[in-house]
Length: 288
Ligand SMILES: Nc1ncnc2c1ncn2[C@@H]1O[C@H](COP(=O)(O)OP(=O)(O)OP(=O)(O)O)[C@@H](O)[C@H]1O
Image (tube, rainbow, N blue to C red):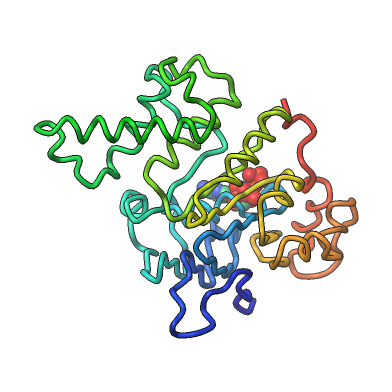
């Protein structure tokens, strides 16, 4: 495909800052299957971008490539204008990429607060002297407490994380992702398995994130996408089916068709793309 026009491009003038995230023709193959196929994307700081599509469209693979837990066969990834395509996950994390997972990754035997303290500690700029200057650790702990306030868990700071409900674990997972003060936050199906009340809380939290934090959200709930995202990429069979401003994308005939149960009919990947209609809408059991 031709490179995707930037949904929220910054690249118009040489004086403009580089995009916080730039993907150029990113491709990942597993054997004969192309899971991510020449995907390009440009995001400005503070972008709220959603990636939607049917099961198996390549959404999680795309997040894995950005986070560095998987490597592209070709194409490039740049963060703030720096090529990070070959950089390891830990380095990407230090450069400002954070991620929350479909299954919340919290340490059950630690307290809620300790989980956030631990997640943020590797990002603390002056952590090495903490043994001699305990005040540094205290300040860090206070900052972790503020992240808990952000996600509405301050009252539960000293509870073992294992005792939290699924919805609250997701909030804790989000707080641990925020603990490193990311430039780019990758959210993999944050609303999956949440109650309507939790989804409302999640919308409030993500909506109130610091404006400089760019968010890439993989999400099946189209109402969550409509509420949070200002731009959307629709993937089908690894390719960009359509991208652009949220309202335009959601009104696009092929996307509407997909959400109303009519299969797209043409193209070399039509066989895989035929799964779009039945799986695009949010799973009925996802609200818990
Ligand atoms: N490690 C792997 N080895 C082989 N195939 C893989 C691997 N990871 C993903 N795939 C395949 O790549 C395709 C894209 O998978 P991916 O998980 O990225 O899709 P998705 O859009 O996130 O789907 P879902 O909405 O179900 O999470 C699928 O056909 C999947 O089976």
